[in-house]
Image (cartoon, rainbow, N blue to C red; front, side, top):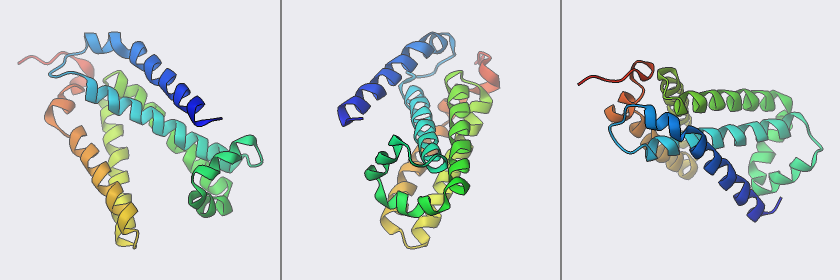
Length: 170
């Protein structure tokens, strides 16, 4: 699949998700524009797709999808020797991210908690990578994931998920 085709598919997914969940956002109590909340939901689904794709390529080798490893040959070198033992956790991660994205877009408290947990684990993993010698990758990942976690923990973001979407009385 060409780069332009991948971009087109991603745009269709993003536009479709935005239209699908717009009515739910209109009904939910809001303190600010949901742009950040929509972006996090899209990120969760994008990550679910990527993790599932990696898991699929590790579990079922020899398909045309294997060409995608050319985009990240280092990851292939590190993960390919582990095959299914690495692929199955990636598939589980993809399912967890999809569940988190679903709960996120429905503004469920459990969706917020799951997203916070997943990003917190990412922050810790990036920090460990930085201390293990991957200063650039771990450091950059730590800053990005840390900023995302700080956004998720902002009171106004958390309030959008309060009591499983029961309107907040102030």
